[in-house]
Amino acid sequence: MGATKVINALGRNGLNRPYEGAFSNVKYREYPCEKARDKQPVFDLNLDQVLDALQLRDGMTVSFHHHMRNGDFVLTAVMKKIQKRGFKDIRVAATSIFPCHDCLVEMMEDGTVTKIYASYYSGPVAKAICEGKCKEICVVSTHGGRPRAILEGEIPLDIAFIAAPGVDAHGNVSGSDGPSACGVIGYAIADAQVAKQVVALTDYRTTEVNKIEIPAYQVDYVVEMERIGDAAGIVSGTTRITRDPVGLKIAKDCAKLIEHSGLLVDGFSFQTGAGGTSLAVAKEVQKLMRDKGVKGSFASGGITGYLVEMLEEGLFEELFDVQCFDLAAVESIKRNENHRKISANQYANINNQDNVASKLDVVILGASEIDLDFNVNVTTGSDGVILGGSGGHADTAAGAKLSVIVSKLVNARISCLVERVTTVTTPGETIDVLVTERGIAINPKHSELIERLKAETNLKILPIDELKAIADRMTGIPEIQRRSEEIVAISEYRDGTILDVIYRVE
View 1 (cartoon, rainbow, N blue to C red):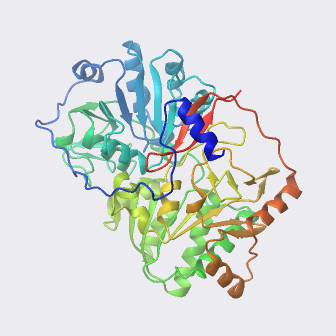
View 2: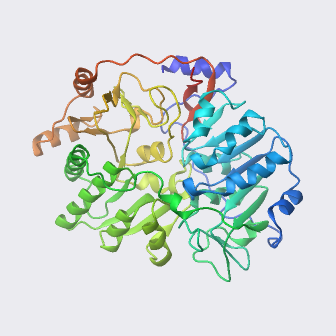
């Protein structure tokens, strides 16, 4: 959508912070590392007793983390009790929403929940928001933008409910212990630091936890549940290297581009997603690092077994892990001191001068749509229905020296290249390269890289409009989908400004 249309839409809804540029609003800050409580956590109360003690009220904001992903039981258990008690206008600040959180649909319909903040949405809740079932405008943030907003008071948290895989005798919390171990709970750390009340819900008590992430003095109550989740749900989604020949070609071409970028040298830092093609890129980069004798400094982000393998092989000195994407990563972080837990603030907060995302050399990302200005959409489908969200997409694209989108040019007769993306998730000024099976488009600002690749490789480098023309000949130009003028959600940039708006789907 055009900038004027965004600003007009925002103005009608009392929202007046339109996006101004990837680095226009950076304000480096020193955040307090800890918020100490003046008492020790209260143990041996059940959830109902704790809810009685918390003095719940209408209009409060409650938070949850998503490290259990589609295996999470905590949000549902807590929110059903809040609903049963009759509270209304609750704002849910969850780090991400998965299909297992479908209880929120009924709660939006009956007024229990009237606003949701999250970095990623999927399943019935995403669909319900797009159908206009939530009373207030919801927020699709970034993984770095969320802790920034919490630590800077933009999202005041009344109660943080933390799924705690392991809690020790003092009340210290870790993601690395017990039957529900998810490895890391880095997205919950900011919540524990600033929420007025913190409740750790656990299914495993021990004398001493492995690698404390939330210290006892930030916890007010510890509640034991039968189960906080199903660890198998952590690996929901694609976490295996693609076997598709098209995806493998994209991965090989991407690795060759990285090889000739000038960045694949000792000290190289890297992040890739958990999608099949992205993991194939990691495998190709692993081969290159072996062959060239390159010793990387770190890999980061959501960690998979493929990056664990590279750490154990000595190709990287460290892994910085804010979320484990598979059980191999969960096991690794328990035993390997060089596999380090980090908070979301450390990972990608734009106002944290030492954030890891800003130290990346190369990041590999996906896209559902990319347009002629290199804007990327991973938030909605072309029909406007929410299918995901930024997560760390916009954060790492801005921070890395080279941000690379890997995507099939045409998939199921739908082109990834469009005139204008349905929803801007990541602004084009922070995207450097699009790698497809039919050619590679490089942001024109990288003229030196374009010339080098043309001189040193046989990669097919094309202007992005020519690549789009190839796709259009294969698919035709799709009709623009109709949407209402009712805004149901906003796509928020990592600095808190608004990139785009999401309309109710008719």
